[in-house]
Length: 312
Ligand code: NAP
Image (tube, rainbow, N blue to C red):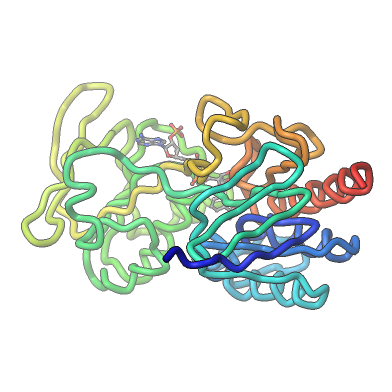
C-alpha cells in the first residue's frame, strides 16, 4: 500500500535555505505570513563552505558557517518553519496552489520563492569524473588539508579560483593557477594577494585537456591556446573553480530561464509564473554574493506578501 504523505500548508514556501532563502524567510515571517523553508541539506547554503567572508558589511571578517548561523538564528527568532534534509521530488509552480513534494511530505502554499542556488561547473574533460574524490575536488575548505606539502592545480581566474588557491597555499607546497586568458577576472585586491604569494605560479592562456592518474591524480595535461603547445604539469590535486550553474533542473520548461539556465526575474524578483519568485545565485543576476542573495530574498518576500494580500 502506498504510504500517505504528511501534508503541510503555508502562505509562503521557500525552496533552499542559503542567504537568499533565510533572508526571504525573515521578511516573510516578519510580514506575518506563515513561512517555511525546505532544503535538501542543512540550512546555510553555499557560504557554509567558505572559510572566510570579508565583504559582508558589519562583519569585517567572518567564517562562512558562522555568518549563516546568524542568518538562521534570525529566521528562528521570527518562527520560520524549517524542513532540512528534504529531497524535493517535484515542484508544481503553475496554478493558485504551489506544491512541493518530497519522499514523505507534501507542502502547499499561495506563493513560492525559489532559492536553490547554483553548483560548481565541471570542466568536462577526461579524468575529471574518474578522479573526483581522488585528487579532483571542488571544495578547498573540505579537502585542502589532504594536500599537505603536495602540488595542486587550480583552474579558473575568478574570485573563487584565486581565493581558494590562496587558501590552499596553507597546505600545499605549490599551487598552479591555470587560466585560459592572461588577465584575471578576480577582484584586484584578491589578485594582488596572489601575485605576492611565492607559492603561487600562474599558467596563463592555458586550458586543461585531461586529468591523469593511477589510483590518485598524478598530473594534468594542458594546452596553450595561443601556441597550441600541449604540456603536462605534475600535480596531486586539481581544483576546478570555473563558475557556477543554476540548480534549476526541478523547474522544467514551465519557467523562463536565460541561455545559461538561470531563472529570469524582474526587479521585484517575479518570474514568468504568477506567485513564483526567484532569489540569489539561481537567478540571472550580475553579482553572486551573500549580500546580493540576501537582498534578493528580501525583495522577493516583500512582493510575495503583496501578492498574497491581493489574491486574498
Ligand atoms: P566566475 O567569476 O564566473 O569565474 C569563472 C572563471 O573560470 C573565469 O576566470 C573564467 O574565465 C573561467 N572559466 C569559465 N569556464 C571555463 C572553462 N570551461 N575552462 C577554463 N576556465 C573557465 O566564477 P567564480 O569565481 O566562481 O565566482 C562566481 C561569483 O561569485 C562571482 O560573482 C564572484 O565575484 C563571486 N565570488 C565572490 C567572492 C568574494 O567576493 N569573496 C568569492 C568567491 C566568489 P574567463 O575569465 O576567461 O571568463
